[in-house]
Image (cartoon, rainbow, N blue to C red):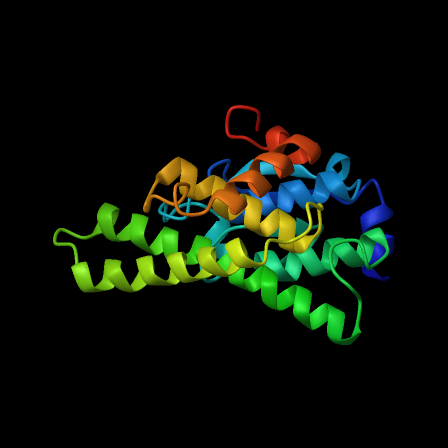
Amino acid sequence: MGIRDIWLDPAVPVVLRSSVTSPFGRKLRMAAIELGLADRITREHADTLDAQDTLRLQNPLGKLPCLLIGDHVFYDSWVILDLFDDLAGRDRLFPAKGMARYHVLTRAKLADGITDAALLMVYEGRFRDSLSPRWLDHQTGKIHRALADFEAQPPAVNADIVGITLACALGYLDWRAPVAWREDHPTLVTWFEHFAQVVPSFSQTERTNA
């Protein structure tokens, strides 16, 4: 039985283990809404710091998001996004093949790198008794270089993988504020505000609405 057959079987539960604060989980929730898959998914909170959470049994790395389709387990967010795009018929989130696919994936990974670096900065402050200025500067540099790249070459305002990933990254920067970004990136601010207006899934996945 293929993944599509399992997905279409209403007797098979589909569960997304994540948290409402995870930017990577938000990315999946946005994609599911945009692809018309959200009604099939039950969301279940996961706590990466809880040793008793079954997340560590489902994903040995203890990381979220994690998608359970019956007895099948999928992680991380990029694997699940590819699965979603397959279920939706391909070419919805990113091109199925060719040079265009790899350009899109590269831009999306750049946007994801903003989130990765921001998370590392947040964790540095949360879990270390003594902060490392050198480490924080290293992560800050990643964020500012990536933002400058998008400032010079903003993506189309579309609910594709680049738009969704970048919007989630910028939303996380606004919320956790590891760096100040808006003043130096007016083009990106305009892009972000426009994206939030024309892509309903962004506001639908705000923490207050999740």
